[in-house]
Image (tube, rainbow, N blue to C red; front, side, top):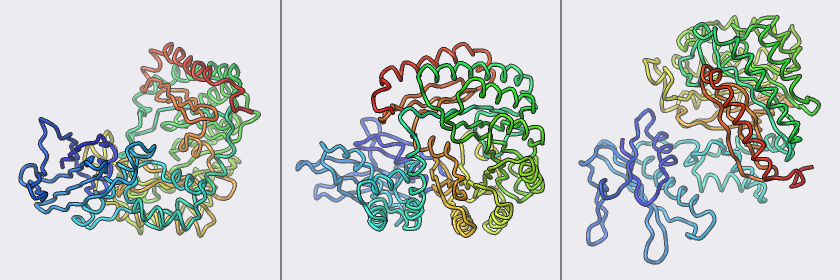
Length: 518
């Protein structure tokens, strides 16, 4: 399918909406100009004509400034020889601060009206394409809107469903409480261990099959500890306050117990831990969890782990490339509780190939029977470099109808079991454009998850694939420092990694400590 842009450059946002109405299709973006001809023409009497035979299926989007200063959006959607048109007025003047956003919303509403007439699809998130819809809710609440006014505004302006808007409202209450914990001098730390026992069908992370890359691990651990030492010295020099630590991957528990102990001991030696609110190690795969690894994690100071079954259906687990069974999940959970782990999060994925709403409901019931402190429910994302997309990844519901039922079951069942949503975000190319939701029992919310998704404060990253994201203390400016993606690059060019960390010091030099910090 072709996506024509005429008079604007909102390609990302328009593509995201096309995916919502035409799931699984490749969308080719073209700018109308002297080489690309518009499929629309206008007669002398003002009648708009659509050339449906020139380019097959397409979505045409136009922003036009009229002689009286008005700006309007026009969309034509052509599918299987049938065409729907819709126009919208841009509500902001060109000199208004929110003009560009209003242009995006006008085009979005026009696409929604035209495409929904043609396809019958009404995406539950309406025209919203951003990953942080809760942020929009919080901003409206902060400006004095009541919950009912927010619902009315979202359904009228963004065409979101009432159910999704109310989910955002519920999430925003807890999320705001977590965000308010952060100070201008707060930072969090992400430690990357990008190795896994095997590569899952849906995964596109920069993670290495540990059987093929085990020879890299000793050098990787040594250099990671050196980077942690350098990063800790930087924090001391800048007088920053470490709030949360997250050891992720990959699957950090592919490391041996001794290697885990070495990394976590380096954290202890390199950072002041007296202000730390949360310390998480993502155990991930149940088949990598052992008693000695759990003891190393607890001795290192971590108090929160993730055990991620994704599903409790053995056939689905096999299909997606997981080398464990549902029984392994229950065994690993029991082992972690017996070892004294205070907080366990469990990740699930809605919409996996071979899964059904009934099967996912059984997974939810099985997880709830364990009573973990937190549960995160993701929607399957069709990532371009995953085997799900590049190879024969099995049958999945690209339109997301089954995944939508699964997510609603999660909200209902987890809510009834005492879990509340505390963070919510969206990814590109998820089934049906649906969301990921973090649930927890009261007091067991994952603080790091909120801080990184909201971009609340600086996140310093160590390890291959890590991205340091610096946020201006008391302000909104954000800059990034990238580590090399692959472990072999990280090892062979480690000196450059350390050199790049100087950018953190340079960033904070622009914002003296007395500028809003307490």
